[in-house]
Length: 224
Image 1: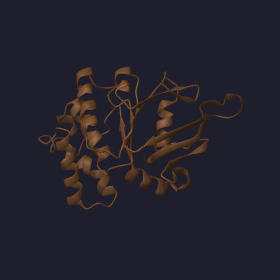
Image 2: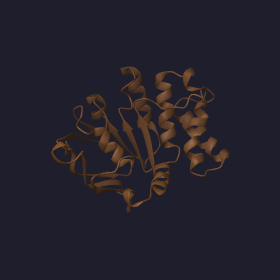
Image 3: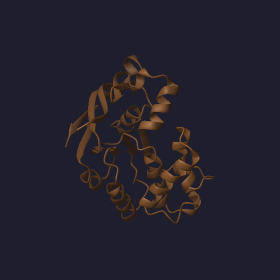
Image 4: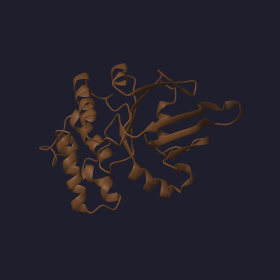
């Protein structure tokens, strides 16, 4: 199968000299198209740091992150931002939806930023929201949506550009168990066969539903 995202010998340290803190230690990870991967680990293990590096939001101290043959950190900041918008999606514990935009407008935004026409962007956003059970909530703003609905909008926003990979940082951490289960089921049911998902989670029930599970410990990833 096609490798859509890979980290090669990635290390990350904060500070220098005797005060340096090593978070990631020559870590490597390879994601295949359509694969769903969970990353678990204790608080402070570096899970969010790894996700930020995979997404090109934080620069590694050494090593590289590749989408196909392109090293994200060989690109300029502007180029990296463009690549990130086109090839990566992000979902966080909190939805980060802008209060003034409707669900439809929020989901269409990454496509519009990427140069897609307004009509095509709204059409794609509408189809995704319908697939996620929000056909009757498209014109609602975040304050008019439940927590589970807001998170589904965030998932749709992450998927609208049909990215190679979606990075999720505790995407159900702010939801009650029943709503979290519903959101995960909808994610699994989506017809995005080529998109890989990386989910950072503390929840073993969520981890168990993924194709692969890794534990981050002492800067290294170990398959569970």
